[in-house]
Image 1 (cartoon, helix red, strand yellow):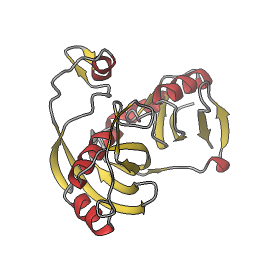
Image 2 (spheres, rainbow, N blue to C red):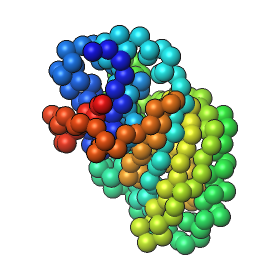
Image 3 (cartoon, one colour):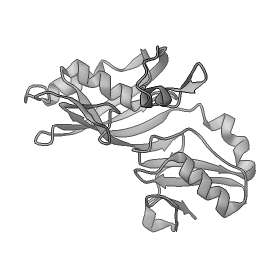
Image 4 (cartoon, rainbow, N blue to C red):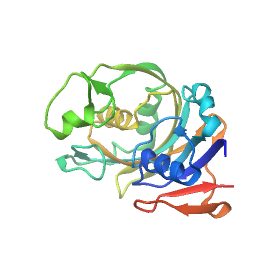
Length: 225
């Protein structure tokens, strides 16, 4: 078996989980086009056998995500699984549609972004999340990214949540983007997760359309034709 399998990745399942499962099933070399956050759901292309030769053509392409962001709460990991560090009141003015849209528009174009401490980027031979787990601080160099498009989808006032869609370059960290959005809105945040809608010409496949193979951890599935 050689080619590309499009995975509709569920939450709380790592990219490594799915690669490992695919290797066991196919007995072939397996790769992917970029690690997804465990909290993310949606498109994850897996490259099987000779399909791994396509990696250099796919890995540098832009991505489209749908993001759910909760305002007023900050955790040490920047997501719902971390310990709460800070809470702030979220006034109706902060999540007013006009204001949110204006803030989102300020992120269009090329810019420098500081990756989150809970990431796999290596500094002095160690991954950043290893420093974070040890309670150590480390200087993180900003990286250039580009936001091609960003638009508000919904506002949930009672839950203090906003949902938006972003079309961005490779290397964009959604956790960092959410952090910067919250700062411009005058509050703190955590993100509940995001969904990659597409990667180049790949799109999410509904689970009822494919045969599903149950994974080894937390309900992970492989979907294929």
